[in-house]
Length: 484
Image (tube, rainbow, N blue to C red; front, top):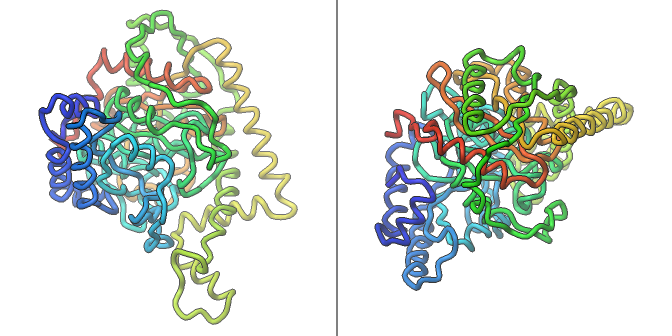
């Protein structure tokens, strides 16, 4: 049963082939048996999951089951969950138990989904390898000596290892798409504001966006249909009605114009990754699409502008963790200053401290205009590049990550090399665009992701384009050896 997709589980539950309790029990047993190899979960909520599954079976029997009734999922440990520890992968929040559910969690709960627990992640979502977690690094199911990508590495690894068919995740600069690419899964970052951020612990508020990681585009569409909704508790959430993102999955893509940025296939891209992406583009041509070469001239500035804006926003957001109200508090502080300094010094990890320092510097008097304000101006230029491109094309495609998954510890001593792993994904966050990664082959035995970037609020077309590729290929059906 662990090999089933969300769509197959929905059909199986409604056809009475198995119950929600049965598949939930099976997956909980599988997590217990094999997740020790991957470390993809921080918290497993077995008793709660079985209660939710029993309630789902009752609703299914009554015939009034909502969309995802009885489907097991897991949440990235950045989403607040009522009565269940929400750590954000940090010692700072190791003892934090929220008194409420995030809107995304509540939406999925109302849709009948069964939560198996909380997945591991880079601390406060800061990282590209899932090695900065207080709970230890997550291992890639394709090779446990390699990283699964970050920051949503636990969510991606759990899906790749077939521990759960779908997970929630977040993407600030590529943290859904990059781990999806490195684990051979499907990851979707919606348009900024499409999914509520209420109850999602903030990293960089103008960039963060929640979305799903699944095995297929169809499953991503099913989850997004539930996750995306208006929310008056989040002022940045778009007032757009919920919609069924599965409705247009089977539409023809004949005549689709695919923009291929020359900047995305040049220097710095692994040769085998380039080959796999080019092969995927040829497959789209066979499906009737037209390739159009485009330019995104300011894309080279995406990384430097992001690593001013994101740390600046992080330094402001993380100032709330002071050892006073909630979270970690140092022992026996001498005075208030000592309380603040030691609580933060002991509670935050190295990568989080690095970004707080960079962000505080960029926002300081005398440097705000030179760094933060200038980065925001560059952000506007990057956004305009996409606006101009979408006047000519329907979607944009290229690699998700410049390299396949690298060895654990390989880039820990070089933060800049680590930051460059998100070089192709960051621009969509700066522009607020939707993007997704789907499997398109292998490089050096590890999965490669094809990135699809859609126009604003055009998730339906993006999912249709991804689904058509997955109907014509079987890369998304390949399973990690350890998961078989």
